Length: 153
Image 1 (spheres, rainbow, N blue to C red):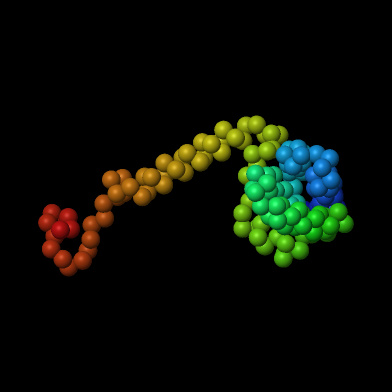
Image 2: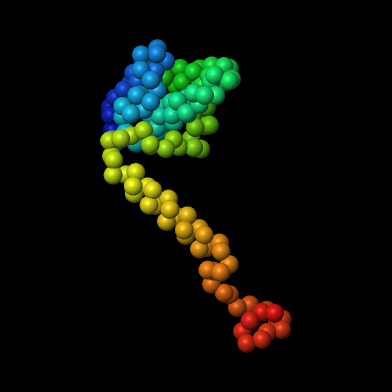
């Protein structure tokens, strides 16, 4: 990716996170406005995941106030780097690189949701077919045990 474009995406993401942290917009609004088209920057994707989990854990924030503080602190640290156009340090990204937030809040490509739904269910059916003994191909054992017409006893 072009370095100037990566810096621009990082600064745009930082502006959205600033607005969320200053209670100017809701996290969901920031996620809907996230710079996703053509964005391959790992820092911006990681910041999206951080913000997505911050929004998803809203109910948990009411029960565990220190959890919310921890998420806000992480967002602030990541945002300080993004605001300067720098990549988020790997120490902050390590917990969020293992998981990727689903792009459900991106309504820019409405046609993707049905395709993902189809892909999910096709994968479920394939998993069932591959793991179900009724549908698995019968393997004939070549061991020296007793055989009866190609079947293992």
